[in-house]
Image 1 (tube, each protein chain N blue to C red):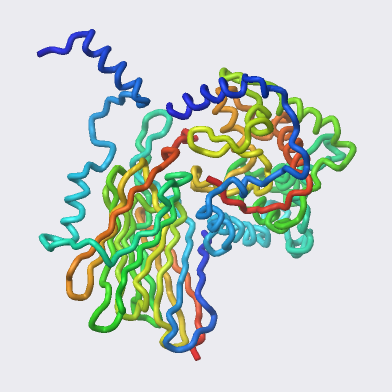
Image 2 (cartoon, helix red, strand yellow; image 1 turned 30 degrees about the vertical axis):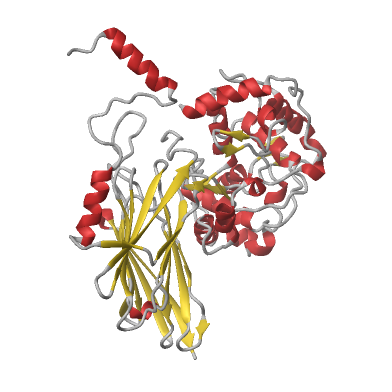
Length: 155
Length: 259
Length: 105
């Protein structure tokens, strides 16, 4: 059924009232949960992902999405036969789902990595650790971004 | 767009009875640092995690580099910046007798380039100019601001105060409406600060780079939908001078980190 | 372009030490447009490696979601005196290195 002008206006009005602005776009500007899922499966394959052992320190409310401090740590003895091989961090709503992959070894001593990331919007961040026995463990955090990234026009 | 709406809402807020601009008493003056969250403070506090320090390092290298037709480095005249530049930025913008007007630290660096190094001026907000001014201003970190004490500067401080108090732009807001009357409230989720210029040039997380106070003033002007003054214009210099004199006694923080 | 490296100058053998690095890079995402609508091409660091006396002890793949002027902190066990070498590799042939020494007692 073709959209009538009245329907379109009422739809547009509803969207505006909700505090967002309708944007016409031809390609997805944010990573969809499906893209996030694909990105995760590219790393873990078909393996089961368990929840736990991984800790994600990230402010629940960030002052600017352009630079968000983040620390991932994994509960591991970091011995020759029980250590963390890698840590992978993903996001839900940036244009791309990957944030970083970090490769460790028994000589890392402590399974902990810090960096600063960009979050284009309020969203989930997922950290997954691969242990030496090839099991995968994950943790998720919700981050509220108070001011969307890139608000100043480029010069 | 949400930001504009919040600014529009803020107009409603500031056109209420608390409209009269009252200057902040000296003992109530607070650096923007005190309005930040713990993560951003931590980023500023540790020199090995403060990204502004990358520019200070670049500035240190430039300080010792011979430039221009004169083939002179800053260090050839000024020696070790750690002693010669100590507390200098805390009194800028300073009165220049030849020009009979105040000049900013950025302008002083370019005057030095023109007069003593015979080098071309560095463009405003260029990496090299920011790096040099960050390196010089870093030598004043912890030193209380004294800018504006020179009596010759009085008319320019007054001009800056007038600009600070003057409504402008389509939103018809003056600096004072937010930064004297409504600091500690929030605008679009972000705290409104007192606009104390203690840490310039500073690393703004939003910019993801170092920037000058002029860049900050210009983005505020765009925020109230006013035509921003040009870099280096007498108006921006006067505003910077007023803001620095208004922050008298607060310690310098360069390079500060701000959201 | 500057890099800031923080490695303890001295450590006891077997200590777990933190290494922090901060390097200058714009980390242009490739998703931004200029005011006149042109896409700004991607220009990021894609890989970081740390070697300790020649042996790789930490590596990272970076994506556009890493903030400008990338900061990385990680750990290693102090085994012997020597040198840490850091290498950042990125788009458009970008390559940058730094190093730091440690004395292990």
